[in-house]
Every structure is written in structure tokens, then in C-alpha cells.
Image (cartoon, rainbow, N blue to C red; front, side, top):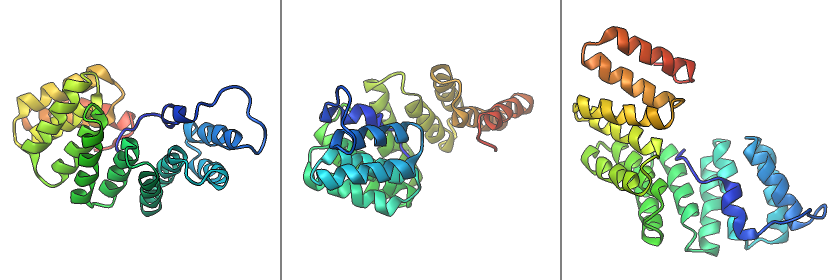
Length: 228
């Protein structure tokens, strides 16, 4: 799943202030947001559906339901929710990004790129769109194009660790190991808890013959939740 903006932030469209009355639209949104932030995705979906039953054309809630379904690994259902959000508001770039992420999870990379491109056309300054596009291009083996996409993301948001990590793996695939190491190093400086970045550093060090350092990097990745 591509890293997304917080659903709570996206739902600022709804302008939730103060205490919502029980069983009201705002109440169910608040409950859904709380569950989503706690990664209780099934509960979030249930609450969002209650909100949707009150306002079925609210694109932000449809997007939020898609994000929660994606969190559950229900990618086809997530795409359906994102499509409903897009149908309601064709300019909601985050729904297109969410759709791209779900399509990626299903290995439908060309369709994912199309979704990211549509999001970029709406708002070219959303770095996460470029990261998603870079990931999909990398999965297709289009590493130079992927690097271009990651560089676009980095130009917009230099401290976006996911962009540096993605760039590192694309450079690694091209056997440009020194550049890859530098990209992973930058990602780790930004987010020292990025297990993928530590794993990437390990792969590069291994190729460079630094077994001891590579093993240390892999061990760090494992501690952070990414066994190699």
C-alpha cells in the first residue's frame, strides 16, 4: 500500500468540530476515524458505512471506506469504494491514489500507473502520487522511469523516506550500487525505523562485499519487521 495522507486529514473536507450527536453523520465519521487511526479497519468500515447510509454521495467518506478496506486487504472492494468516490468527485486525487495502491497490490501495474497519472494531472504537487507511480514502474522493470518519478516526489517533498527507498531499489536493480547506498542512507536519516531501507542497505553492502555490515543491516531490518 502506498503511504497515504491521514484519513483524518482528508476528512477535513467534512469540517468536524465539537461533540457530534450519537447516530449522526458526524458521530459515525468520528468513530470511523478513531478506528482507522487505531488500525481497527473492520470497525472503521462498519462506521463509515453507517455514515454513507446517511450521506451516500459524500466522496470523502467513500474514500475513507476504501482506505479501510485496503487496510484489510480487500483490494477489489477497496477499488469499488474508490471508484464510487471518484464518480462522486472526479477531482478527488486521493481516491485515485488509493485506487492505484489497491491495483498495485493486485499486480495490475499498468492500471495503477493510469490511476496515479490521473491523480498527478489533478494535483501534480502530491508527492505520494509520484511515489506510487515509481513503485508501479519499478514492478514493471522500468527502472529509469521509476527513478524519474521518485525524483519528482523528492523535489516536491525532500524528506519523504518512501521516495528515497524506492529510488534506492530502482538504482540497485540497475547495479548502480553507490548511488543506491546513498539513497537508502538518505531514507534512513529521514526515517530510522524504515525496515525496507535497512534491507536495501544490506543488499547493497552484500553486493559490495561488506558481509559484516550487510548482516548488521539485515539484522536491523529484521528487528524493525522486515526479515530478509
